[in-house]
Length: 134
Image (cartoon, rainbow, N blue to C red):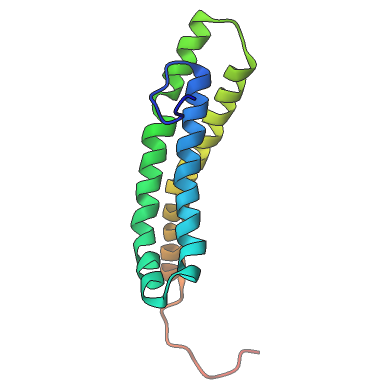
């Protein structure tokens, strides 16, 4: 049995490695967000919930480091030395999906913050009249 968390050297290994790291990180977050606060006593449940933002950041960094980085180099090496394979096509698609997901995780909160700040600055700053508008 091959450990899916060992450093990959081929496209198939990288695909398994990347899927394993992503699943482990997202599964841990899902467990922490949805299951543990409902199963643990109230004090421990609230402690778990308060630690989740930092756990989310750690999961993001782990996915980026272990699941995304190096994937393009392994796929490119396979392209140079081997014929087209279904595994390489799947690895390319997975790398694209994972990169878009990781980018959305960073850009989503930044865009939301920008929209909130824009809405706060766009509000009229004059005194509100109690007179009806006709």
